[in-house]
Length: 299
Image 1: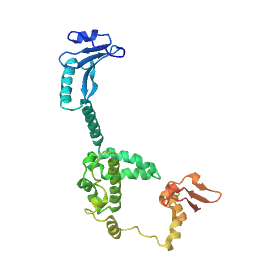
Image 2: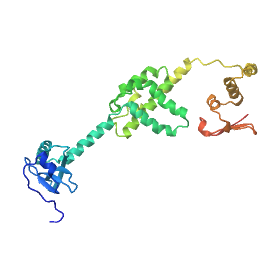
Image 3: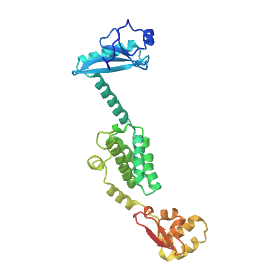
C-alpha cells in the first residue's frame, strides 16, 4: 500500500550485509522480536523497535548504524522490552532521566557562580560603577575564600555564620551589608530553581536569633570610635590660607570641598560639562548625588 514501509526479509544481518543495503524499507533484526533496521531513501540506516505501549503503536529509535553496532542495539532492545513488559515507557523514562540530570547540573553551581550572575543583574540598577564594584567587592573579600567554591544548594546557616561572625562585632556596617548581599545571592539561586531550601542569610527567621542586632552593634561601635579631630572655626581662615599655598590637585580638591560644602566623592568625579563658568555654578546630576536629586552649588 502507498505510504507504508515495506518489511524486507533477509538473512542474518551482518555489518557487511548492512553496508550493502540500499533499498528503502524495514529489515528484521534476528535475536529480538519487533527489532528492525530502517533504511531511508538517503540510504542512511538506524535501528528501531516496533512495539505497543498503552494500546498505542510506537516506534522507538535505538541509534544510527554504524555508530551503534547491532550487538549493542540488541542489548538495548531487550532492556527496553523488559521495561515495557513491566509497564514502563522507556522513552518517558529516558526523558525523565535527562531532565533530572539537567536539574542536577543546574543546581551544581557554586556561590561564586551565582554571586557573579546576581551581580550582573544588580549592577544594572546601580547609580555608578563605584557602587557596583563595592557590591561584589565585599562578597569577594569576606565570603569567597570560605564559601566561594561550595555548592550553593548545600550552604547552610552555620556556613554563613563562618563569614559573618568574625566581623560582626568589629565591622558592623560592613558585616550588615555583606549579609544583605549574601541574602540577595541566595534569593537569586532560589528564584532560579537552583536552590530549594530556605535562604540561610535572611535575617528574620534565620540569623536574628544567632547574631546581635546590627543597629545595637553599630551604636556601640560608634561610642568607642575615635573620630578625627575637628578643626576649630577660629582657625579655619589660617588653615585655608596655608592650604592655598599648595598647588597640587589634592589641595585644590580639598579647597573646593570647603568652599562648596560638597562631598569628597562629588569633587573627585567632577567633569567640565558640570561647570557653568559664566554663571559661576556647578550642576551635579542626580545620579551622582546620594539623595538622587540634582544639586546646584554656587562657585
